[in-house]
Image (cartoon, rainbow, N blue to C red; front, side, top):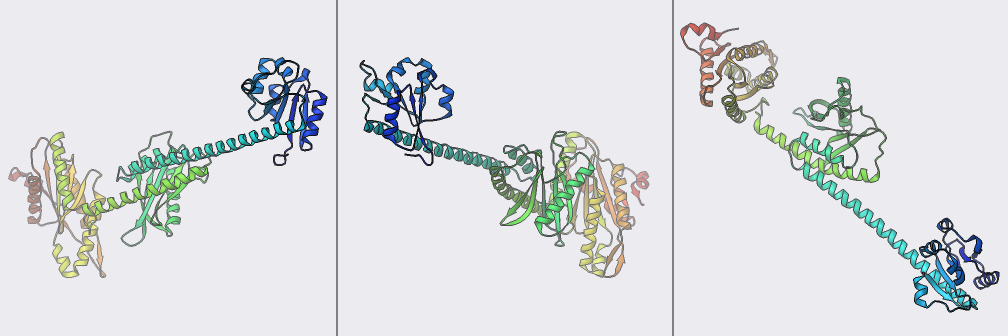
Length: 495
């Protein structure tokens, strides 16, 4: 008689008191009866507030209802309507009754069995409706879950596709920022990656987005280093910074905080090698779907970024000398060919320095090859420190080094070469408790604008200038542009 703990509600519209008593006697306890008088029939608002099991309506009352009330009753899906065919006239046929939206029609006198049968049929229909609604809810829920999973697959596919399109970490991070914005507004994305250095200590590479000022920049550096130390399980002893190209001023980063920063560890095979710091609105709360998608995206990005870091490491080893860590002969050959093309296209000066360490063999003979290797490493570091951003330093072979100087004329190249010579001359080396110094000879060759020279010719002229420096006593800088004997004093310049 009850649906759960709820009492079933039975309505009547304009029923007689006698028929209401017959309903109560036929149905017994567990039902709540309400009969609406003809002068106060229920409004649409009354019908919207509740859902009776059945509504019993005499035909005379139905005919007297205004069209709007009939429409409201027909549209009342969960409530079943029972028509009482009162009056002497002939009632409607079955098809008409169904068209009017009634469950059944009863002709007086209405017995208790007919009443119970009508209520039983109403319960069956109500149960059918409940099953349909329940199935509909389940279907809608499954569709929603499927839609979420589809959106997540599309999102992850976008992240994976774009991440695998480049082997440049800064490009991968820029694309990741755009892709993660599909989940929620991302105001900035930065990264930190670490690996053991030559001495085994951890060295980090930080990728920073634009900051408001130097203090904010330093705060972000400290945050990324602290996060790296925590995730790596050990202190980070050194770091480098690469600036990410992101638009200003709307993308200026706020300071990191638990409310505005999401930290994503990057792991491969269970081992963390980096992390991403995502900046968001302070009031934005990430839901379970956000966290799940971010975690899956981090796995894809970790693989792409790890591959990019490994590729760069392999490329660096291929392009750089293993001992001095500056560019090697192969990368020099590629670079000088590129700069010669640029020199001929834009008609700008191009200079080349050829550097040779004086009496280097004696260091290997007297102190050993390890001492010689130490000297070569330090000379490589001096070259890196002394060169401008546009210059290109490389180890040419043995104790010889080269420096390519684009857009540099002969006088400028000599000044830079002389500065380099002095640094090497004043550098003090210590090996096996023995302190010593080395000197170098430098040859300078310059191509003037419009000159159509080849790589071999430029190197040959620099080699000739180097020979001139060595033959005139070493530890000096010489240029190759000798036109006559009167210029020798200006060409051989000793510091």
